[in-house]
Structures are given as C-alpha cells and as structure tokens.
Length: 300
Image (tube, rainbow, N blue to C red; front, side, top):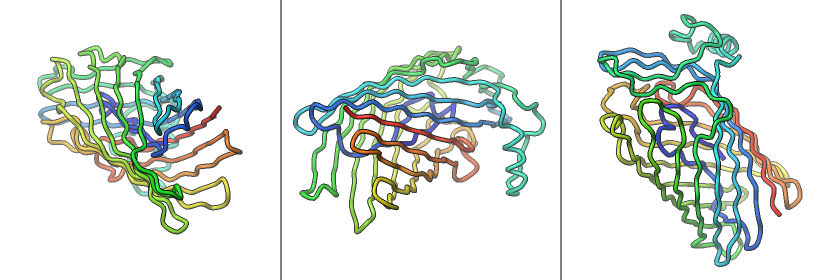
C-alpha cells in the first residue's frame, strides 16, 4: 500500500494502492498503515506564496468484510498528526551528501511549523493548524472482482470509494468526494505486475473554486518479485493529474509522481506486513521529499 501525503494534494481524494483481490466471503480483515514524512516547500511568485514546513504522521485504520460473489465492503478512518518534527537537520545533511541542495531550507529554523498558501494579493487560500492525531477523513468503499483466471495469477476488480473529509483548513471546508478505479494483477513467470487506474471528483468550497480542479485522474503500477516463500520485493510508481491550477508553478500545481521501493511479507495465512520508502520524482513538483511507510494486516 502507498498513498500521497503532500498537504496540498490532500485537499482532495488521495487513492491508496492495494491488491485486486477482495477479502474472501465471510472473512474480516483489519489493516493499519503508517506514513511518516518530512515536508519543506517555500516558494514565492507574483501570484502565490507557499510555505510548508512540518513533519506529518498519517495513520489509516481499515476494516473490510468479504461478501458473496467476490465482493467486499469496508470503512477507513485516517488520522493526521502535524508538528515541527526532528528530522530537518538529518534531511539537510543527507541532501548535502548526495549533492541535491537544500534550496531555502537553511533559512528557516529546524523544527519550525507552517502550512499556508496565499495568492498574489496576500489572501489566504490554505492554512492548517498543528494537529495531534486529529481525524482527517472517513472513507466508505466496496470492491468487486470482475475476473479471475483459473490459476489465480490474473485478476481484475472494480473499487468505488466515498470520502468524507474533516481536515480543518480554516479558509474553507473540504467537500465529500467519490472515486472509481480499476485494479489489476497479472502474473508472468515468477513476477507479478499490479496496476491501478481511476479518477475522482474534486468538490470545492466557494473560497477555493478558483484554484482547484473539478476532477482528478490517477494511476499506479508495481512489479513484485518473490525472494522466498512469504517475502517479496516491490518497485512501484504512482502518479496523478494536477489538483491545483492557475499558479504556473510545478511545486504548487504540477502533477504528483512518486517511486516506492519496499518489502511485503506474510506470516501464516492470517498476518501480512509491508515496509516501504517513497520518494518524489522528479524533485520539482507537489509530492513530498520522502515518506517512510509501514503496514500490518490481520485476517479472521
């Protein structure tokens, strides 16, 4: 599983990648996903002033239940913790060692906090206060497997999601959105390829109608290679069309794109775990510098 954690992108629906198979009929599965990010973006132009300086922990708890006819239903709650953090110095040293540069990072104190976007007239468009484990959104979803090969190596599913946001942007409340996506799994020799493509609405408050699009498309593709029974390596790419518009700056209204590398493992038939590192690509864009991700699932 992977998900975009960038503050501006989370003004709309952000899809979480997952497998094509629903939970088997009569079974219950609980998923816990954690994503920790160090975030810094400061940019000023004639039409905007952007300042993002924080560390963020996203905690997603999902419950899903298997239904007849290869289907499942579920609910997910996402909790958000935003603060100044402790990794600024580590990130600066890492960027220096890799020759990536730090742009204006050194001009701001370590551990500082800010989430704001203003237009050229100084009007606040986004301003989000610190949060300690606040509820970000609740999602209701259903998945239906439309095709499965006899050997189980290939599958196609449809997934529908309704998102109810609770994020406290003090300028204008977010609106509920719906998303629809196609999930696929394809086996080739020892490899598995997982894919996702879909889109969602972007329903905007009146205050943000001039800067947000009305819809967004997204995709994901991953290659999985088994290292041994119960352990696989995964390389994944995710992306989406732009969410914000009219800023003419890739750091604000560009298309997010990420690369994820990780490990996926199972313990028996009940437990599953994931560990991954997510990096933005290319560096100019609205995606986060990096995110560390952990996930754990239990099936009953």
